[in-house]
Amino acid sequence: MTAPNIVLIHGHDLGVWLSCYGMPSVPSPHLDRFADESVTFESAFAAAPLCTPARSSIFTGLLPHQNGLMGLTHAGWSYRDGVTTLPEHLRESGYHSTLIGLQHEDFDARALGYDEVHGLGFLPRALEVAHRVEWWLEQPERAQSEQPHLLTIGMWEAHRPWPTEDYEHADPDAVDVPGYLPDTADTREDIAGFHGAIRQLDEAVGRILTAIDDSPLADNTLVIFTTDHGAAFPRAKSTLYDSGVQVALMMRPPRTWGVTPRRSEALVSHLDLVPTCIELAGGDVPDVLEGRSLVQDLRGEENITDRDLVLEKTFHDRYDPIRALRTREAKYIRNYAPGPRHPLAIDLEESPTRRSLELDATVPEELYLLGDDLDELHNLAEDRRHESLRRTLAHRLDDHLARTGDPVLTGDVPEPAPPTRARDAQAVHTAQ
Image (spheres, one colour):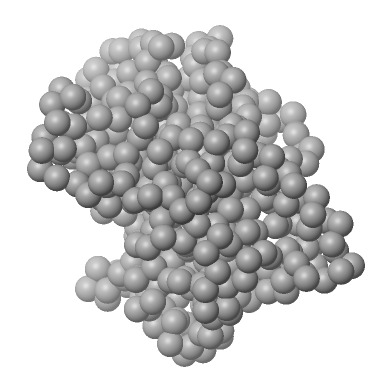
């Protein structure tokens, strides 16, 4: 079978805030239509709740502490030597790779292994990116080339801020307010702006999908849509609650496969994307990767067996080491630096929603039964009735962290050396 082209579209700070994921007030008609054509994973998760670490797992199939990107790349974090990225994996199977738009893994996108980079990672706004994708697909070589392509498309939206001059805000009285946020005028004002950014993201994705469908690549292309992590609200982004790590994941198989669209209940991770793409390309999936291939899921063979998903946070704009283990039924969280309350990233601390929200104190351990407590508001870690479950999940988390060499087990994780001109120049020289 001919190896398919692969298009991976990723947004920013979206979580599952889409109509097709049960939030009817969100203006996302193009993505809703795409979900109707795809295998839509209802229980998909990022490996981390922050942009650089989350994307590092999308593009390496490794947890952030394994690949080196435990914090933001513009704060000095970089991939470890020897880490192989998705475009580098697929090059071994004969793929040509292109990046259009946002990336947040390195100062210089040319260091990431792509054959083509448009904008060097600095064409992030959704409509600008869509325009560039349309141009790329119209080039004569798209129709002439028999070489399979990997095209990754990144967009800034729906990252804060959401100013009215950039986005048409929704009616605050008509928005959905999730159960983990206070239903106040401040929160509704905030969500109304978020909806405006999502509307623009959705419009851009619609244009990209139309361009793909009208191109020579249409019939033999897998199209993936996801986001990096949860939405930019307190108790979501930057936390290991589902609101911070659950993500939209829709995968439309090539038309030539004849797959019937459906919604999948399988528990899946961003770590699964690299193994999936390698298998589709005809390569051998390295044993070192943490995820599993979703090719069988895409072909209609449902895999709903339970599995442990390990989630992690180390640095954002401050040191805040947290690790978690999630199963289908429960989540165990360990906070390595307890404090008076969960720290917020600056964009969340300054948000209108923050004015209406009281944050709980940080505690060493948290345990949630997800079937009864979807918003993870009732910590059962000290409830003796669930002591056996807490100990079991804690032990499984420890085993995983030890097996993968997580540095949090040996004490505070040091920050990287700050970026310098000499270091940046060396990185550019190495990439050329």
